[in-house]
Length: 411
Ligand SMILES: [Zn+2]
Image 1 (cartoon, rainbow, N blue to C red):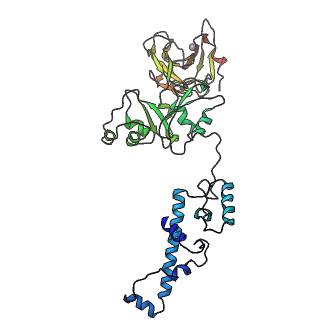
Image 2: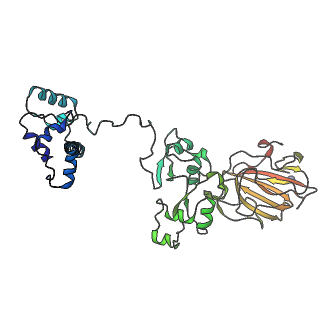
Image 3: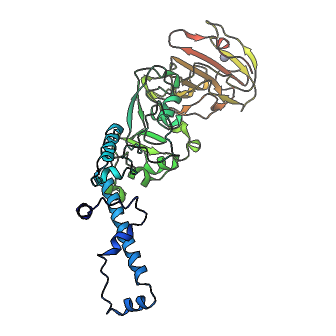
């Protein structure tokens, strides 16, 4: 900077600025360019070839160019630019025009825009009215309070995640049902697709990682998880039960979501007592409030009667599949001494239980999480039965045993 100021100030007349000067070398070539003395052999050679002047000129071009370049850099670096407001710049320009004094550098270098000017044309930023995506990747799990009008999909979209990541991360809060979403509910938002998982006592990192298509190393080293990096590298991390762990998922479609446990806010147990009763259970998928026909045949042999037969009997053949009428958890699985034979009771977590009796085989054990349509056993004729059939009951905690035909129809 000082160099330039000095050289320009010492000029007897206003010297055209290098930027606008057509022949900047002419002036400087007059005097100061001091090349090595002619004694130096190579300058002699240049002289012989008549090239000395050319080289000297070229050299001075280089010098002038460097000066301009330094000016430009200094400009950008220290912001000696004219005031960003155009009025100020115009005023300065007008002043300049009326004065015959050397031009102040900053005003002459107007080609360089102030930093606030959009520098590049052609790259535009997409307008995102509702996005909450930060500029850089979010690395931590955050909380989000549901607002009126939100849906799981809109929340997922807002955070750039798949809806499964939001649903399964918050499956307990949502009680396994996306319809329970309501304003004021606080959801956990994972930093990427995958789930925030509350570590259980029996959980195994290798199995869980495999289930989500990732590796134990990736889980341990993910910035969302605050594990000691040294211990993680050595594979010596102990995850305390109750710890919230983010498990990234690379292929959401391949995940067996049914293996994720849904915790309920109420402990449940089978309405039916007996050796097959499972005891208290505090987890399991929540029902959809709809039921499906529990087998493949539609031959009803005994209808509902509240005092004599509070169920329907659907006849078929031994071995035909029996389906869970809705999502839930098995709360009774085994023999019943009260005539049901081999029987399964499912608690649907919404006030409903369903019972399937006289099975030849039971495929669903105590505590098993089942979904609408899961095969839970095979038709049989065990217990007080005169032929292969399923005795199907629907029991509500307030209404008792209701007529199943009010809720299901034969296929
Ligand atoms: Zn029956």
